[in-house]
Length: 393
Image (cartoon, rainbow, N blue to C red; front, side, top):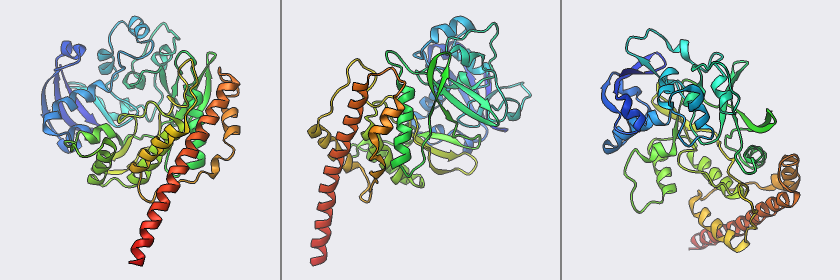
């Protein structure tokens, strides 16, 4: 099977694919005929040579609902095929960039299939929430959206929104996203996604507005790390910063400082190189800056039967290590969290969690903040003393 990778209405490459191997998940690209290499997706264009073909295959894989998606069995039963087939039925179009796939003899334009500018079918999105239908339409970004959690896109008044379900046993991720938003509002000067709560069929979900536009591409930190070979003497965080500097990404220092500091505060268990990134223009061939901070649901010590109590000594060690990754002039304002307890209790007021556990979340965040301030003051005093000694010399 041959298809044309498109960027909006620009032809990028002709790609030949083995359908059976695509289902198998490896070695499915048989041939690539470049048309406009300058407009290749960033992760492909800048991948080191030995990673180039892997980057091509990953581009396709990341545009398919993964096998570990909650309710994937129901989707396959109702739709009668596999995610690999859904990808092409929906032309590979998504709500994260302007790339899509067109069959060789198809005569359609970007305006015909773009999900950014028109309503799309909601039946498959509903199915991810176990809401079945007599008929399913494949003109939807829900078939090119990754991740393990049930989720769906919605279009309203010219804007698109992502709705995400929680996961068993406590389904607290939507509440966690809401609390993370409230904390970010008070301490974070860099851009972040604002999450709110929404009730669907008796289930509380998170909802946020899409921050992407069709003239942008989301380049993840993982994409950046594959543009060169990581030196053994650099930590992963240091290497990401080096890659940001290499590609002249505006504002990366402050963004990474606040991202890592924020993840420390909320005890984010799922921050990885694939769920934060930077905004790139395929037409201007340059970065605009960091993407807003997003995907904060796996936080606040939820997701298990027990609510742990953090230890000040252990948190001090973590804070000390964190500070070594932050820029020298990083100086967070924490006064906005003086009403932390009120914020936390208000968010979880109607959540399926006990008052004792909510109080423990407050105590844990307080302990982390105190540990950070303790280590931060020590480092600041040390720097001040060094500067003073240098001036006296």
